[in-house]
Image (cartoon, rainbow, N blue to C red; front, side, top):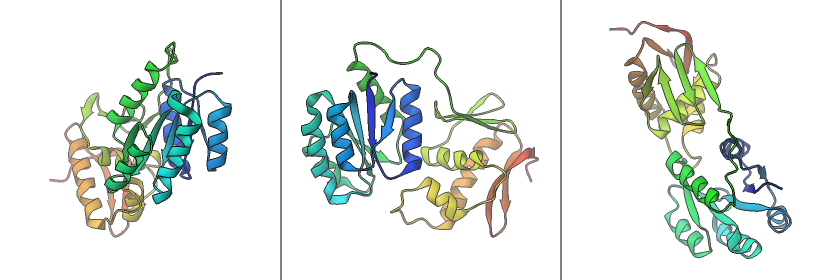
Amino acid sequence: MDAEVLIHTENAELFLLLKHVLETEGFPARICVDPKELLDAIQAENAVAVLLDCSSRGEAAPGLCRQIRAAGGDNVTVAALANSLEADLSRDLHAAGVDTVLFRPLKPIEMLSLLKRLHTKLPHDPRPRAAPELIFRRADIEINVTRVRVTRNGHAVRLSALQFRLLLHLMRTPDIVHSREDLIAAGWPREAEVEPRTVDIHIGHIRRALNRYGPNIIRTVRSVGYSLDEVAQPVQK
């Protein structure tokens, strides 16, 4: 059986994102919603790592981490996903035996560091020779989710991690007008308090970054939100 990564979360969207990244690197992944199911799977299956979403477990997270460490011993890498505001929880998780704490929103460089660590634990490199890539295109813009890269007309577009998530949300369903509340849910942690005006500011940054290499493509629908035009429109001066 191939080395497997078990993901404990109630967030289906987060699981699908992590599953895609892991399987691109050659690690089969499956979700374990129930803690007992997770602990049983650690002992019964060839698990190389456990990713534990602590965003909804609160003070119970360190206790579950201790059970995971006891079930898997030193053979299983334990990584916890925590909100950026939970500094005290991060300390408690490390004390409970967690190897790595990844703060949400996830930083690509930290995820890559975790994957490299997993590869060193294996007797062989499980990565497929031709890994599938998740790519979305709209007009002359391409967003590569696997490589966390945005290009326009062949030029790399520099965006922050937050701006990447907002643009990705628009690119997934470009014909839909996304409200500011929808974009807040896609870009920020649930606990974050974000004003609608903050969304406008970040969309403005994204628009300026894209407009360096082509006409405007982000359409503003007054009092509603934003969408992406199928054909880029000239920049208004």
